[in-house]
Image (cartoon, rainbow, N blue to C red; front, top):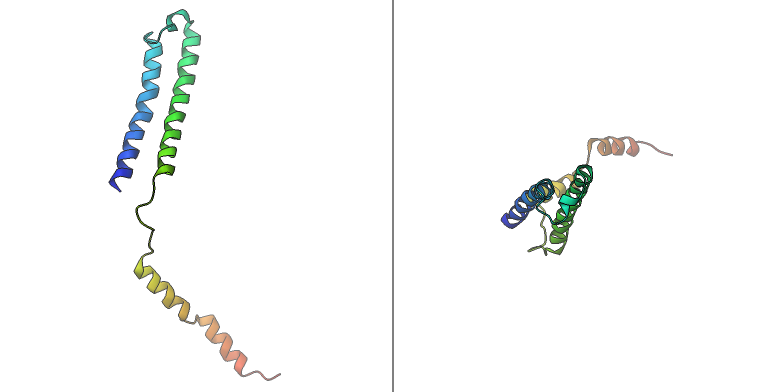
Length: 107
């Protein structure tokens, strides 16, 4: 269970950091060739790439989740099973009243 929480926490942090880094890189001309673009083009490109980067991180997280094998088959709660079996075997009040009405009838 702790590995799932760790993967989720790391993915959540990366999902925030990567788009911010992309926007920061575009605004401070860290990426080569960005200084030749107009300011509106820089804004559009940085926003578009930030959205794409978030989608890539989410896709990678889904891929990791699908690749993960379960360690054990899920088991139902024994208390719940006992209560469910007892409720199935127990007649309901409507069944009891229907049976009493049906026994007195003669067709």
